[in-house]
Image 1 (tube, rainbow, N blue to C red):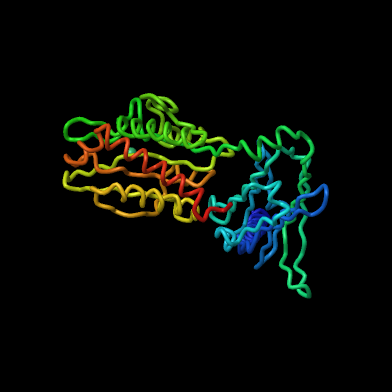
Image 2: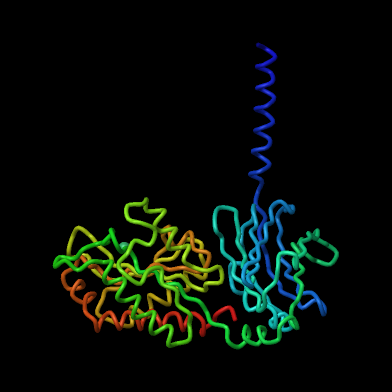
Length: 352
Ligand SMILES: [Zn+2]
């Protein structure tokens, strides 16, 4: 009995120590550099300080030209700002852009958008310790094999015919009407009508648009838990999607509540920029009270792999706004505002 007690006690101590180790202070990423190293190699250097990483903390995945680097026990730090990422001029021929997202606590997800397709075997990962004498921080080194001459045609298509992918998510649908206005206008019909109009405008502007739904349906299935339905929407986004925009109308028990607002996930830097641009463009339409740009943990934003925003076009429970939201003219204006915001996202101070 005593022996068993002791065994348990020792096990408890071991588990406690293991728990302490796995909860070690996360390291902070301090910069990402894409470097044209030599004829064969593109180097992605992710520098960090404040602790130690090992290869178990690093997971890479390659899918249709995107190299995803998942880093456990890290904080994105400076890297979540545009200035934290540098693509040197030679590397620009191979890297379109690099996006960093904090996806969960102490977990950072980095997407390196390459201009050609590579395989998992084309990446070599190593760790370089800090070199104090050269004032160089510790680095994760990803050496990626270049494929400039692999397929000349495809390369040119990638460089010049690249279409940015925008995902539009008309909120609710099918068995879920969303909020319903005083005269019976449904949120699901407004979100779909505005999204379909925005799909057309964005397509005309040269984007590839992916809709989570184009008709009055549940995206997963009727009656499934909310998380299943929302994940089905997130999953409609391909790994190389640039933006995810979810379109909704607000509701409140008091019919006098009014105005529009836009949301982003709490730590999403690019998502916040998208939400701000959407808010500015919606505000420019005039007529509605601007409730501002807010951080929130809406499922589609926190689970999206690309910058995401959820917009509340107006209060469908407000008699005046219900009428506006249902009008074809105003829907067209809302669609134009969304398109303008997307255009500004890529043309003004983007990461290119
Ligand atoms: Zn909604």
